[in-house]
Image 1 (tube, rainbow, N blue to C red):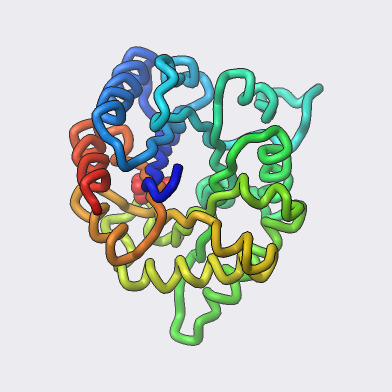
Image 2: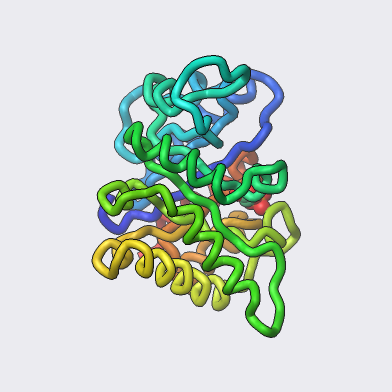
Length: 254
Ligand code: PGA
């Protein structure tokens, strides 16, 4: 993937019909096909995975999922396992999204999801982020502890299957993204904590994405000034005109 930027589209619980899921996925694939400097990952709801699959085996379009079960298989009604995802040609999975954390996922649960994902050979997009910030910097302590406990079950040889998505919770689904200068500082911080866990060599290589109110207007600056390796995009990823502009803008960054 070299230095190509990674754009992960988290569709959340959208769209409402299979028809629309096929339409959004097809358009996203077609845009990706015309671009060379980015990789796009589309994370639809499970039921629409087949609509968004990488039909033509394109190199820069990938299928992802929004979560994965902590269990391997068996009597877990409503759950989807990492092996099932693999069998649907899913390559990436988001774990620890703030909306799942708000619904009850603790760091311990997130770390179990993460372990299942990487053990099955999926690449995990691990979301981390503080709920609020203060002058004293207690959000940094919060973030450090969240990252460390989320990575607790992971051995160093699996660390290369992890991508960090820094998403300050207050910027998710909000009006404005975090300022790009702050994104830069925070991306260095999360990388440093990752290096504390796995060592410098592995830590240097981890990709850090930013997420939270990214759109076609702010994407370029977030990448350029925030110096992140890519973006985790919610609302704009199901808005095809906006997502198309966003992908083109990031692709054009030299
Ligand atoms: P948003 O969501 O882009 O709609 O703010 C981001 C996310 O939840 O990953």
